[in-house]
Length: 291
Length: 273
Image 1 (cartoon, rainbow over the protein chains, first blue to last red):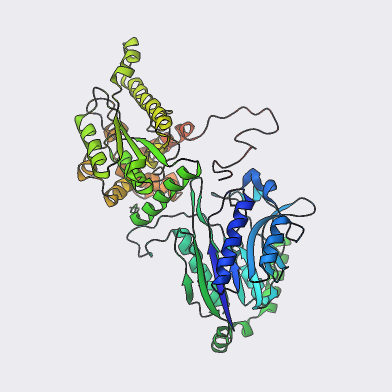
Image 2: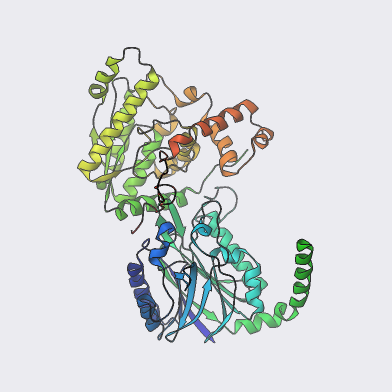
């Protein structure tokens, strides 16, 4: 089975959901015309990233009563969509969220679990943290979604893997930082932050013998730049595509889902994984910490 | 010793993108900058011309009677090379009446007056030319506070403020700043014979390497000494960075209400764009 995937690496208007929605609908149409089965958008793709006090003014409810989601759900009848937004729950907590839409329905919503609040990041000040991760079934198999800092904690992709995810969809609004030196052998044209993300995503694909795809914001917010560079890795850890750095693009790639079978015959890491051992040892370590 | 070399092509891509994006999203398409004849403003001018097109850049030369002739000529080299729009507005007649009122005025006050007069001209031309003022301060001078508050540090956006002076030199070379500018000693040119390194008491190369370890790499002072820097130099630089923090932040507002600018009224400048 083949999955035609469109990775949207886009700029956004800070705090203007309707203008961002327009761009989403345009790209969804373009991806569909190019034969895509699924299009994924970056973290907070409907709102922009450094929202600060704009958070309550851009929050949405991921269901068809919401005028924004209503249009996205309608569009999802032709193509599956993963989109980034701010969710306000029924008790007025705000989450960085991403939703997977298919055939007019919301299949899954993930709330970002790890909110970086250090260095240039200040998410914990404005958002509530998610408290769980779940893989979910789609027409392309079982999927796990994570948002940026979530996949810097190896435990979350690991849990999703055990929960059955064979396709990892990662979304970021990763501020570019770390201008590489000329003489240290790094790939030219890529910031340190871009290299770090690519390296770990490639490692996850290889370690979990799964597909790992990632898309990221482009553009500027005040002095911050976002580097784009969408990517996809197959279960052998090989890249199937790499989007341009620092430019908007709709990056297309075909994933051959049968590769899961071939790789896992060669390398049965999933078969041999000892999750009971992990549970036993984590329980022991937690008990020791709590004692 | 730390490696301060940079991927100049990548820096150029990010910085021209920054200039273009941040100027156009505020509803402008043009920029104004002061061209001193030194490499900081030269680099900013090359980046701006590339980002916006030379016809959308107004480079202004603002000599004082003691300014070096080289400064004017070097600025002209850039104007000719890039084909940017230009203006020469001498400041002598504007600042001398004030300076003459205080016969005992020392160089620092005179220098500040000149820097602030140039700021007035830039912001006035900003309105006339309908372009935003481009900052030309580098990371070294911002950290050391080697600038005049509301003078040369005043701007709408600053593309080169995260590059140390030695990195400015590297990027300047890469974008084609003329060799004559790259070769000469950096100078604020506020009085005859002034050079930055003489006034600061150390070279930019030394300061940049130390600042890179302290700021970018988060070295402790004692680790910098272990890395080979003199203890009193480390101490002097750290003190300078701390004492000049006031130049890097907006003036604090005394909080009274439930919502106050700077504390709990938080929006990016790019809000809504």
